[in-house]
Length: 521
Image 1 (cartoon, rainbow, N blue to C red):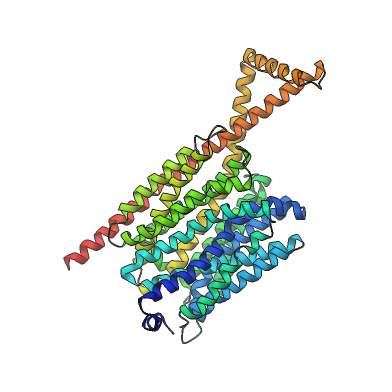
Image 2 (spheres, one colour):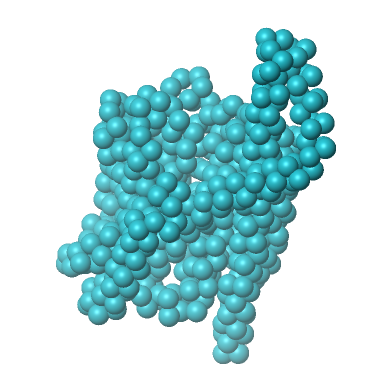
């Protein structure tokens, strides 16, 4: 049964039945992307994970998500949206149960890879279901709902993840999404179309292998360049493999009759501009969602629950604004929404770039709220105009490609942010330490004050007081360098958001040209 038959059976309410179905699944699988960040220290302690094993926990998930996004269009053609969607959620439930019950490191890594496959598969399927349910004239609402599913689960994961690991167990970070998944499967059995191709399409196995090798090599290099060194043979070798195999993948997809990704989508200027915009904006948002909890816990000393509460106002903002933006974005230029969204997000990250130990909980929440306004207003017009510019036969490929761009942007931006944080923190700490040595009188005075404070506490002999004061001063310098490192990385994220203006303006101009051409007819 196709979408038209379902619309005839259920009437206009079908659109919202389909929306509820896919939104439940998107929230469940979206939360799995970042909720593990909250649970990782607890998982690492439970299993005694090494640094390389912890890296597999995140890299395996990211690689599986990124690659499976590209497989989803073929699955929809081969099996139909309903079967693909239900199978994806069944795999997700399996991975969640296995992860929650795991007793050793290998099993939990396997579970995260299964969750990654399902998290990547569901996005193009859900986007296709929403687009067909709402039709071309209401595509803005469809992309708004989909856009909400990108930001809302990430913030919900921070809110619920902290509470779960502190009050119950890290295992509940795997179980918490199961009710959403089961309910979504039940609804999908009735409200998603099951029509598929008359003949089983060929699967591009060579393309899958090439893409898998390229993505895995790239993400492994990014995940290990802190431990191995940016200029190490291991990192440089993996980056070279990613570049060579990635080039071979592109050349193969151009020549093969039935490609995994039809690269003609990028010949469309509007789609190419929208994909670049989502790569940059999505990457910046993923970096913020990673950096802010790290800042609040390591600098502010917040608990996981308190860190999660920082994201609560932004969760409300996303839930309220996204439907409104979607309703209006069908009627007005994408520039009217995307450009202010960029500046709202920049205002929020600029506030985070000036945060320190004295920054209040309210200030952090307000900064995240401004970023959430940007996240509410940016994806709907970008996704709607980018994918809407493609002919119908290329839309499934477009849905996979633009989701691939967002996911790859998130992985790249997060990895680069981690590296930049370490480099800038060390640089700032070294500069502060040098200034203390050069200002010898001020340094001596500070040391004497610290030694005096320690002597009043007692427990140290006179010969150990200055040694302890020097240690404390070194810790203060390190902590201040760490804060300045965070501030500088948030400045980099702000600049990355600013670069989004280029593809956004280009997409807006292309949209205006199309509108004028249609009006002239």
